[in-house]
Image (cartoon, rainbow, N blue to C red; front, side, top):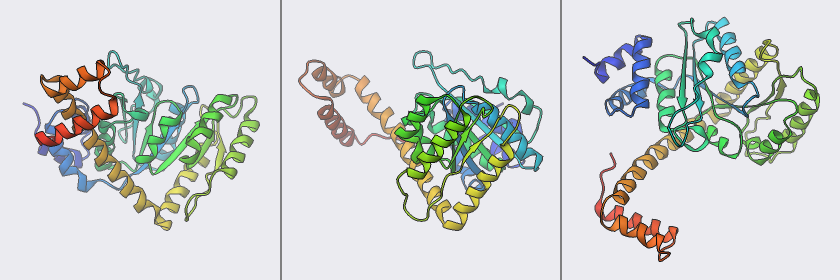
Length: 325
């Protein structure tokens, strides 16, 4: 007999790992029963420090995440880790290799690791990922580290839910520095040059420092992102990084920016859910016989441009008053 949402919720608050894992699986699979549990746990969330960690493949994000978790555990803090891997647009499968790289943490009951596919969401994030953050928050994790896919313009999506955003780069990654210039520079709260024992580390560090100094001035109050170096494989610089993360948390609370971050995340989360519901409703209309198919045919025949087609579809959805609950 499967557990009810109420039972899973009760066990989650009692720190039952199986309940957390079961609820996350339900969320990933889109089971409607999960919605009731999410409703119940919402008021029990909001205490964790959500840390987003991004950077191109090969920059050592997983190793750095592992070392950060080990540092927090040495301070007797509980940690949740969400590793978002790219989902294949053809098979829906994901690499999900981070668990292999984090075996050192697997035996610690106060560390909960979950790998998730991006499900094609912009920046590798999805409604399910946000739901899992809320589950781990209510589960009592002090820190929730979200390691995202790749680096580039789409990675600015991370700022919608993370309270502290860390951008990881490495020496010799000239293209990555260009990517940071293109957009990530504006959302990074902390910049890390990992693998600092490699040739060119000082140059990369200097380039980043110059870019941070010359980036557009934000509205007051301001935070000047530190540029740090570390060797995650050896644990060098990890304690200093953890200190910078905590400094940013103190800054957010004292400046009043934490409340703004929370409001922004709630707004983004609601809009993302609404977008998913409306997209599904529109897809159902398009796939059905009638006016939806007619719109597609007229587009194919070059009688209707995509923007006008979208306007017609919006009108059609409004006329039908579709249930998107």
